[in-house]
Image 1 (tube, helix red, strand yellow):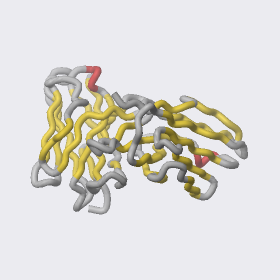
Image 2 (image 1 turned 90 degrees about the horizontal axis):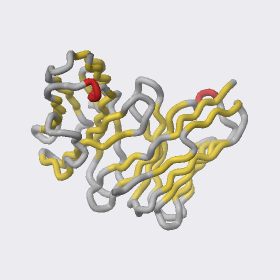
Image 3 (image 1 turned 120 degrees about the horizontal axis):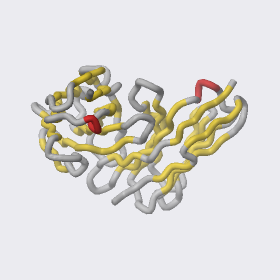
Image 4 (image 1 turned 90 degrees about the vertical axis):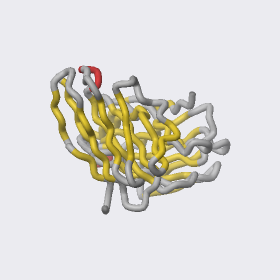
Length: 111
Length: 114
């Protein structure tokens, strides 16, 4: 069974602080996506990483895919209250193309 | 359509009743997924369609759950004899086929069984 574990599960920080969210698995994925979900909404795609070791930047967000394509991290610089939400990683199974979702990290940024 | 559309957005039903949840994927997306999300939790995979066939229905929690997709487009998730533990947000997503494509989600249907 493929599992994606995210850590931390909950994170409450002050505006301006930096943070890193981790997504780990024992399985290899063909690609990995990060989503953010706000209350009452479906998850919204932030980024897709495909190549082992790949780093992508989206304004204050930096995403990294592990060399072995089993893990990923999301780093937010100078967090803002608008970053508040549930962050989900999802791995694409290379055989079935099914998306396996992580357990989620609930982030709250206090003004 | 422009995005994935789900209906209804909210559904309250009595225990024991059947419910149908609908998903309209993005036009041209051959892959369609159903997930379930309990309050504040991650996403639990239910079923995956490629075209009209379901190569992976391993996540359906019991035989009370079924899903179909017609014309390679609209999908319906049916829950028979609903139970209180079925209360959750049911999310639908669609994507193009291929290993590195991206899934786009609808806003979900919040199901409450009373």
